[in-house]
Image (tube, rainbow, N blue to C red; front, side, top):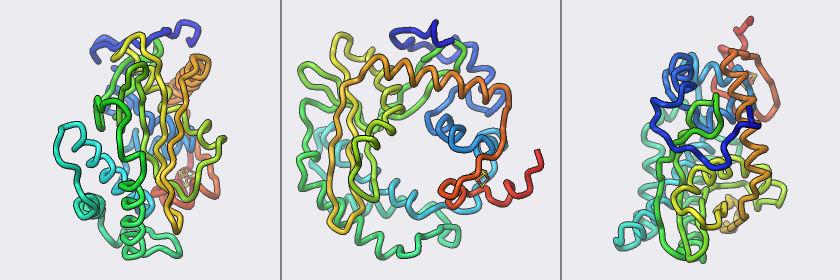
Length: 284
Ligand code: SF4
């Protein structure tokens, strides 16, 4: 129960959290990811197809591959700062971006009505140029990790949360947990607040790295607009928001553990879902 949730994360070996065994029996993985929790909240049946049944998706959206490519390119930039190597130039970042397309069957990629591979490549060039020319390409303080693995028990009765922090930095008085995003447009304040739960959980786990320091979450947003904009949204972590998020995670896990799976159709969610066929055939 959330009333018993620890005030600080309990980083512990996977085998000592009893809920990990239940997760392993259900999904084959002895942990939960934020992506899994978020998928269940969007559509419990989609969660079942992906994480319980392990069904391959019929298609993958170009927007998803594009976002992955930009994400990898920006991480490459920060990885060079972390390791003290020369920063990669635009061509090197574009090479990394294009690599994200290679594993995918071109016939299984669904493009938006005005998108092509060529138009997205051009957009990637503009976004990465804007990023390299922005203050966000520099680091305040020092880089502690890029794509840093993080794992720990958040709430009793819930399997360990496992994830990767895009960028972890620290300055003299704060630890900053950054998530890199691509977006159709600039983010509103509401969007920053609505998107913060994953970072709250990661920051909760990461707080053990630098005890006594303030913890902040930061979204680094690259817009896919005609003239790309690089935004930074930084917020100090509020304990009340962490508790609320932990309570939500606990309820979601209870529903997963009781195998309560059902379709939750929505215009936006179903349009990009890779399980439309098995969903149409589902009869309970
Ligand atoms: S098509 Fe819609 S309702 Fe069906 S699994 Fe996908 S998201 Fe859920």
